[in-house]
Amino acid sequence: MNGKSNHSAPNLELMSRFEERYGASPRLVEAPGRVNLIGEHTDYNEGFVFPAAIAFNTQVAIAKRDDRSLVVFSLNYSEGCEFDLDHLPASPRGHWSDYVVGVVGLLARRLGALPGANLLIHGDIPHGAGLSSSASLEIAVCLAYLDLTGEELEGTVVARLCQQAENEFVGARCGIMDQFVCVHGRKDHALRLDCRSLEYELVPIPPEVRLVICNTMVRHSLAAGEYNRRREECEVATRYFSERLPDVRALRDVTMENFLRLGGQLPERIQKRARHVISEDARVLQAAEALKRKDLASFGKLMASSHASLRDDFEVSCEELDLMVSLATRGEGVYGARMTGGGFGGCAIALVQADQVERFKTTVGPEYERVTGRVPELYVSSAANGAGTLF
Image (cartoon, rainbow, N blue to C red; front, side, top):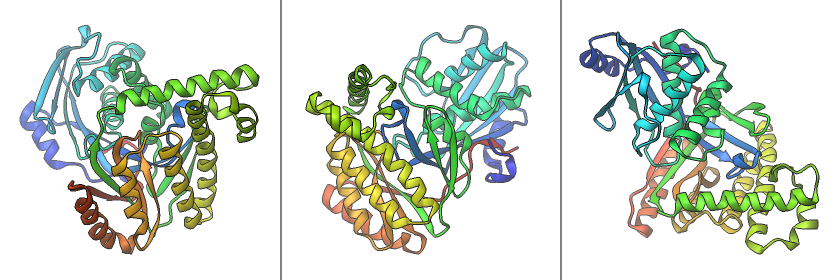
């Protein structure tokens, strides 16, 4: 987590709106979204990922109340909720406030009774684009309450608490990546994370590179069910290899040599899922080394291999994502591109030379629209700092 000097200027409008609504001066906390450069569907297999925090954020303004109420208002949804801290809901209701309640409930369990508070929330992370607006909200709420109470928790503890809230209260089986990079991200760096040990390394991104996130504006309805099915298929593969190799706890522990030697007896579909995870873990480690060498050509080739594996072996891409990646990689000054996130729509990520970004936007966007009839959204960012207090 970072101090306020590393962050954007305090959102004076948000603070003013808070004072109008609640009649008090707030503290202000900010947490970023994220994009994953490479390493998809590896986190829940205890493998490696390589995300970066991005310059799109959730900001939470907070001040104490004199009673035991938790009062929350979202400017994005123009909607508020009120909860009794002594009787927080025991189950989610399929509402944006679930992320707030889940985090506050776990924080209270860890720290003891929390004071009543007023919260005002605003974010500019595109909703539904797979850029971790939910993790950003969780981290911002957690840090806001810690700031309010004067309590401190180490950054990784904050990330795990927020992941636990999403897993156990909201009911989403996310891995640790989103919350972790939201806390530990650093400006102009990508973060190589070992999802088992939580050891991480910050790797500089060359200053001439921009992250261009290409939103297909498509979200296929089978995404959630297929995500859970892929997890189950990976668990089947893990059980198979663990019965034959004593040191296997997750697919992360299976080498490509062992996969080629033993994997032939698996059903073809399970073989393909395992091959993706095993090869993707290797690609993440190779990509981190390539970036350290500033070898962007090699990094781009690994992105292409990752996309092909996600498309053909893990089968989580779709026509729109394949088209977006194809259009992106044809562009001048593009080092590489691939789908990013869970799949079945959402975004592709392209690494683009800074002085070619405008040309990229004026060629890729219109051509995608011409073919699909959908107007894409393209977001340009450098890697950003992790969460912190602004004011």
